[in-house]
Picture (cartoon, rainbow, N blue to C red):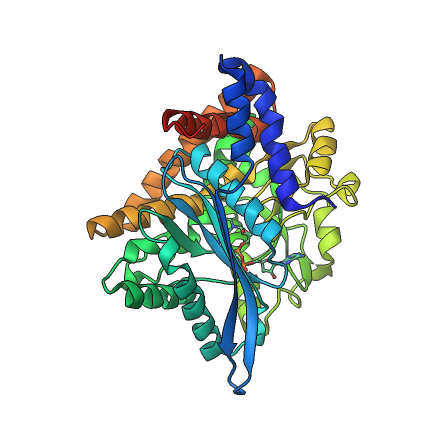
Amino acid sequence: MTSAFTNAKRQIDDVADLLMAEYPDRKLFKKAVEKLKRPQRVLRKSLSLRMDSGKIGSFISYRSQHNDARGPFKGGIRFHPQVSEDEVKALSTWMSIKCATVGIPYGGGKGGIIIDPKLLSETELQRLCYAYAEFLTPYIGPWKDVPAPDVNTGGREMAWMLEAYERKIGYHAPATFTGKPIELGGSLGREEATGQGGFYVLNEYLKTKKLKNKKTSIAVQGFGNVGFWFAKLAKKAGYKVIAVSDSSGGVYNPKGLDVEKVMIHKEKTGSVLGLYNELTNDELLTINVDILVPAALENAINKENVKNVKAKVILEMANGPTTPEAEEILLSKKVDILPDVLCNAGGVTVSYFEWVQNLHGYRWTKEHVNEELEGILEKAFTEIDNLVKIKKISYRKAAYLMAVKRIIDAMILRGRV
Ligand code: NAD
């Protein structure tokens, strides 16, 4: 399987040819594209951690700062055994594209530690967050790089990292991290923001296709923060969520699942299994459903399993869940792929609102947050949908076309190429 970063670079190349005609100075444009395919800086450190047993453990950590031509770097921090330099580089590239797609003033960043956090005690995890934030302190800040949660991190980890960062710099700077607990300056609506954003995109898309929600069936791979909120909001609006899964497998009911009940069960038992008929993760990806929502990790739909995918629409809530090879096959079968850089941009958009509130020492209501979020995602969807229709290209190509142009224009205006 090709690496996530190779996929990210290929996605940029795919639109560069289409954009070239808009730039009279082709040499300059080509230089800018090459620059855009390389992160500006990749930080790596082996963090030493005193374990509860008294022994010293060491854990490899990264932060990739991809491109800050449009604003400070922005992106999550992932704790996972599969974290790698290649992965953070890919995810930071996608963050640059995502922020430009929805028009918020950031570049892309991403960080991670190679660790299964379930193997650490709470105090070990806290010390690891402190050590990571201390390492990052010279490179982050409200106008430099603004980290946030990602897979296996959340408000608790952001609070610890903020504490370590502020201790080092000697003053309060809550706008350095987003996704914080409300008590520490987090925004109302951040927890559900990514799922909420995907739900707005789903509604906009279905409006253009004149499909009815009650008849539309949905399967969600990955029942974590993003998958749960998306499924919950979709169910509430009358869509039929027929299957969900987590790393232990999935559950299925053709009549529709009670999404909240599945979450309560998962919180009690640690997995979604037990309440309904069960299916494997591979089966979930290939069941007969209108809309398939990958909301777990990269490369979920790949050239090995794509031929069995029956959904007519893929709504990407995870980052990079469809490989380019799989995408080619799906597009040839006229499957619409609503891309990650649009569908899951709700998270970074509400992070942006959190940063704005922190910089001004102000609090927005949840209604205000959701109203602003809907406005931003509706506008981005309409711009992309218009390009799809005018240029007869895929939704991903349309989003990339818009985003790559915005970033390259900013790079050229700054004289970086
Ligand atoms: P999370 O850790 O809360 O949830 C991940 C879920 O995926 C868990 O339920 C896990 O069991 C499941 N999972 C892992 N491997 C799986 C597999 N092979 N098959 C099925 N399920 C599997 O993480 P999250 O925050 O919900 O993030 C999910 C995805 O969304 C990631 O790709 C992340 O980068 C992306 N994303 C998250 C946010 C956010 O705000 N949290 C924003 C944008 C994008």
